[in-house]
Length: 415
Image (cartoon, rainbow, N blue to C red; front, side):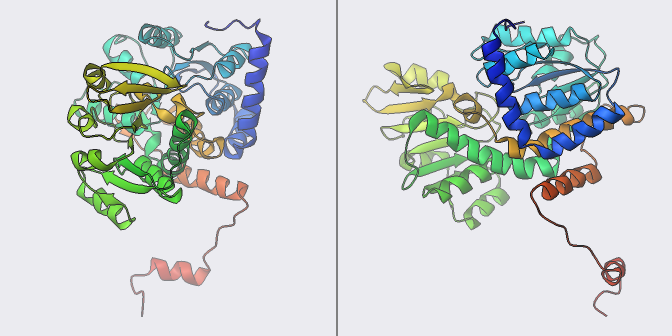
């Protein structure tokens, strides 16, 4: 373990943080209550590679309540909340995660979780899944869950190459995940991280958002709401038109590099901003990444261009170019909402992690009929999560009258 459970002060702080998150996760609470009664996960071991935060801890407790044995490691070196990790260890959940851990420790921790021989894998970026397919080829896994857009892309590529060994539920593809977690969660928490690191004013700033998927959409919407002049770069013409119709300017990365003040990547691709862009950026430009991996900004190239670098504030590093221009990098180019802030609010993670818990139960219930491919969580479970969330928010669904139901089922509509 990386935490001494004798450090009660740290663990107690984590307990309070977990309690605060749990209060704002009513859907997961309802699932946990049912799990405690029905024990659908009894006899199964779960290995998780996820951001070790208070929201994730709430999910781990729900899985344990359902009868599972759980072990967890971090999916990002800068996302771990050490007090939460200590609290999980105190609760008897093996936890391998330390904020700022090295790359070697990162993979050592994944290996430690896999040593528990999990039946189910909860992944956040497909790193644990990749290790299972490259280094643990003899280890049997019943199924997996993937939380991120980036991870789903990797898994679908594995399935297309016919190398995926077990079924995986693309939790990210559930509507109650990507339409809310990605848009509202990433949108708010990414700007939160940038604000904590820099304390800049968004109003009047030219904010360049690379990628207009659900995450980029959320970032652009919130930046615009704070008074920023938003510019979007996009390779997909449909998403580019969507950005334009939201009132954002759309241009190429090289065009945007000359006019932008703040650059935020959310693409899932590599080297979105690189040498040719750094050469055109204005003095004082800030670059940040909201994608899962720290490869969207070519920081190796930036370091090679720089004549000096220094840390100005927590999670804000300055690179000085030969001509004196300064480019500032937030959170080492890692996932900015967790590297420089606390990640998504529990209110939105409530639905995402409800999907995770239900996906685990669904795989167990259907294990004899699933093939090694990427599945979407059944729509009826997705809609159930939405109904529970709406109810918790005080909303009420409209109901169709018998006449309306008959009308919608008829091919003679309008007559």
